Length: 185
Image 1 (cartoon, helix red, strand yellow):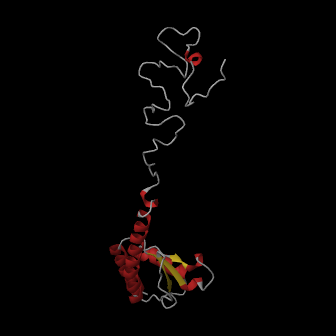
Image 2 (cartoon, rainbow, N blue to C red):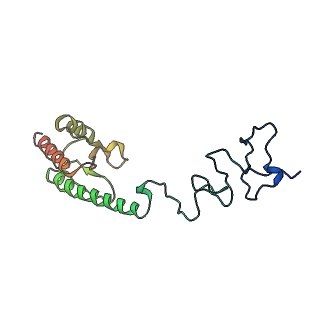
Image 3 (cartoon, rainbow, N blue to C red):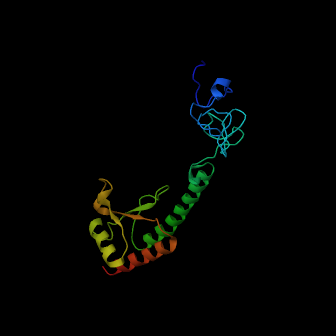
């Protein structure tokens, strides 16, 4: 008797392997390597791909078919670079809208951000404490900012972080509201 074969062997079955198991009714074959499959079924072998187009032992489709890239579009080059470049320009445009508007109402900036999504403003000419000013801006202007206490040890009470993660119209409106609150001192 021949040695047992794996289910997906590429070698044609021998005559002994094609015999029906004992007790199988005529017309019904339960042997996995049978030459006469059930109606509607196909046997996988080296010459006949399965219904999904795959050959035995081939987990990722037909070799002539390129493998589909299943990564999200944002992670496939060159789309990734295009998306990142588009976002970089959008943030630069927002920064260029908010920065001058806040300078006009009294905020000071030691540097202009080049890759961030927020401004780190010196508020020493506007208030004694970034925590107090942040609280005042949220209550009176409805504008959320973050006190410098959350961002390091370099005079945090004199700095306020202001994100520009929304559209330019809302940023202009926020700057106007902040200006009105600061005029009321």
